[in-house]
Structure formats: structure tokens, C-alpha cells
Length: 129
Picture 1 (cartoon, rainbow, N blue to C red):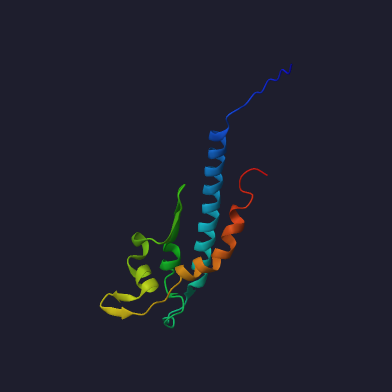
Picture 2: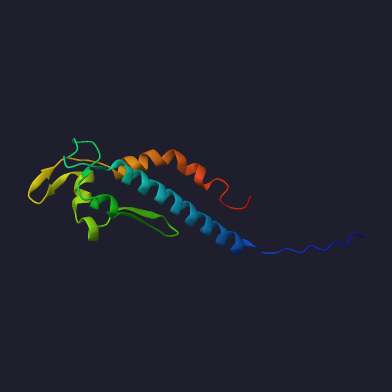
């Protein structure tokens, strides 16, 4: 006759909490990295940038307006309308602003593209050892 005792412990909640924490930390790092890259691409100059190049700024409002917010599902990164108004979207996608037509001067999307190769590495090892 064999006698055996087995004790099990349910740690699924603990693992989920750790995964959520790690995801939040990883999203925060990724968002901060993209924001930093986008801000660095904006040059201070009194002259406008060439179409297709990141925008120039005179008063440094656009770089200060680029912010990010993170939650458990993801991150939002971009210029806030409360600081820069609609000019951030106009630079990114082109369009009309104050009666003038502006070409695309992307700065957020290229920053995201440059960060994509690093994303996989940011989640590796984020839970446990």
C-alpha cells in the first residue's frame, strides 16, 4: 500500500499581479523611450523644416507638449492640445493650420518605428527571474 500527501497552492492571482506590474513597467519604459526620441528629433530653429523632416520649433512649445500616459492596456504618446494646440497633429499628418496648408513633418511615427526593435527585449524577463 502506498500513502502520499500532496499540498497544492493556487498562485494564479499572484502571477497575474506580477504580470500586470511588469507590463505597466514595460509600457512605461517603452513610452518614455518613444517620447524622448520624438522630442530629440525636433530642432530649435527660426526657419521651418523641409517637408518630410521633423518639425522645427522656435519657442520650444512642441517638445514640451509631447507627453505620455500609461495604463495596464497600453500607452498614449503625443503632443497635448493644452500646450501646443492643434499644431502637433498638423505637423504629424499635414493639413491646414491658421489658414495655411502644411506638409507632413512626422516626428512621432518615426520615433515609434525606431523603438519597435527594442520592444521585444523590454518584456523578456519582466516576470520572475
